[in-house]
Image (tube, rainbow, N blue to C red; front, side, top):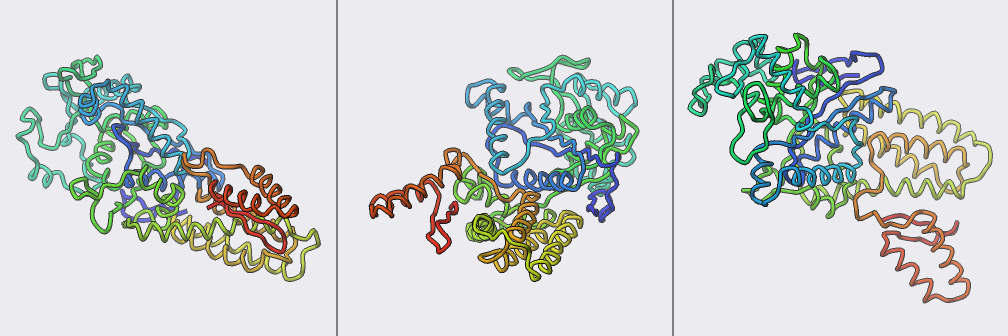
Length: 469
């Protein structure tokens, strides 16, 4: 398996620290509002990376944090006249719901900054003791000049950074690029006791402390959006490697930006898209499919037309699933034909091509192309007249691949009250009975009721079939 490593700027063969185990950390959101469509990309991308590792036999310890103390959180809470705790609890709940709607699996651990203060303070103490940090009137700074490899992830040169830095903001810093590890409280802010002041941590130190606690001093993969490369991930490397004296992460993965109608998403441009709105308009499963339709390191452009195209593409995959399920019900319980035996050998090739795509830096775009090839194969051969064993083999292969990508699922709160398959069959039986009794008005009423529930029924020579819309 090859992974593009941001640190080395090249694809590298993946070698885990422990055999068949992956230690993976993905930077999570600052919880002060609903997540936007751009936030959804790393959620979906790295969930798929995790799913693939698990599908090929790895045990993944997947950690994704919540930043639950921050200037934005404090300001929002003050504006709304409520506590930061109340605000944070609301938006953690909303974020987890959005993730569930996107079919993103819960992390192994979801640590919060406010629950990790002991580890954060201990890490800062270590940095001071080793000469990598210093305190000025209650504020603790990381000394970037003390860490010789500062800039190795972003490939930024410290001298150039210092030349362009605005030093008037904090004259007490030794160097313009030194960053805050701990800062004193302001009036009305939440705070914690520390050896330096009553205050709270800077942004970057939290992830270093959480990685160490939940994954160890060296981890396999650290991931997030490319906007985090500098300064956040650069500073994490400096803190962690200075404190622990070891490589922090062996592989760094970063997804590219999401643009809106070929422009950077911005509230000032009026093109800011909240995930909740997009999910309700097009379906959360469409959002997931759309995000995976491009390679994670490629820029991705969002537009209503592209989302409609994604919805139609996903519908082809869903329809294939319905067709295969219907074919299984009516398939013949006879031995495989000679043609089917040959076709089963061809069927194996789809999985081979799928894994080739995923093992080449998780190329989900090519993997989805393989799924569409399999859809065409299924529609051509696994239909009326096929044996049950052949149809089952095609169905199993189809579901194996789409489940690795997490493409087909009941998504969103709008599906919460959908009829189960058994309930749909009961209504179909009632409609069939009504038609036999020539009560066509009742039969039409049942058809319309099912349509309102998102179920479309179709009368065929083999019987009544249904699909969800």
